[in-house]
Length: 141
Image 1 (cartoon, rainbow, N blue to C red):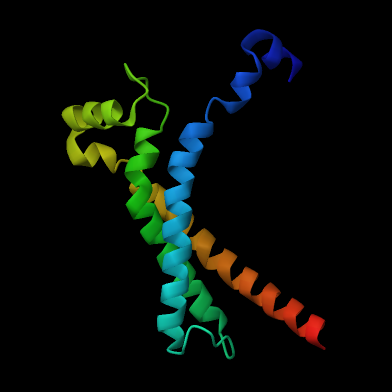
Image 2: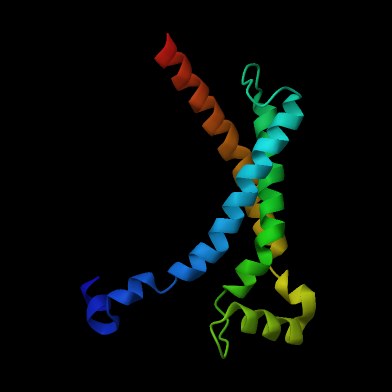
């Protein structure tokens, strides 16, 4: 850390902050909204009812949410990637990628991202929901 501060300054620790926010905020928003909507639909019950939830519902809703969030935000991942561009502006990066590779260029890496995020969410959400239910029962009992 000292070396980085000495050679590059404290700003080096925040160099990717904007990129991270631009990529993660939309991904998280789509992921959470999709998960909750899919869970409600799969459970076919009012949104304020949480009884009788099953792991398969959480896994399916999680996988779908992870896949959709990935599909929607893959262009942002490409835009914020490690390629060198003449300008740091998102607009310039998108224009450069579109000129060079077209829409396909913006979606490059989408399949590997989906193959990572969909199963990860299919594991994460049931784990979270099961833990939440357990702690609610322990707290109430």
